[in-house]
Length: 129
Image (cartoon, rainbow, N blue to C red; front, side):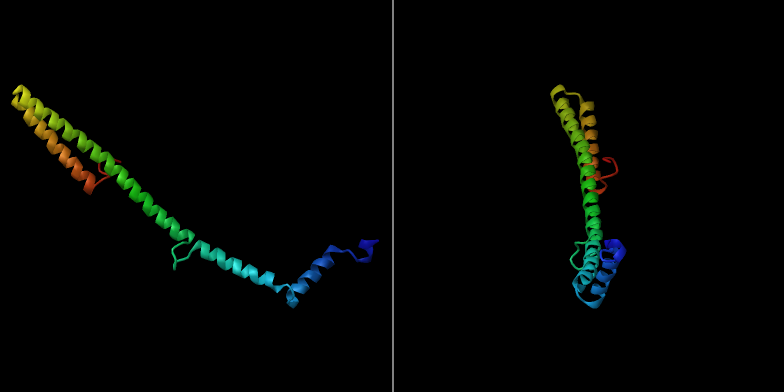
């Protein structure tokens, strides 16, 4: 008998609930929605503190680029270090054996190693990734 008489009709309860919100009782819930939207906008972009999603994404991309540059420079430095070590080894062998061509080859490796070290400093992505 409840639905036929309209006493427990959910449509009527919803309409009376909207009327209460419109009348002012419970209006805090509606103003909270606006504050919630402002909060979401601040989370998306907060230029004053730099802690919004967009600012943090830009900062993260900068950090990733710096990390990639340092990794590429490390690879180039390692190639340069290996060439310098070979140059030192060949120059030392030239002294022990008395073979002059080994000294020139060692000097060439030293020059190549120095050039690779400079490339690692000024152009890290040229060789090392």
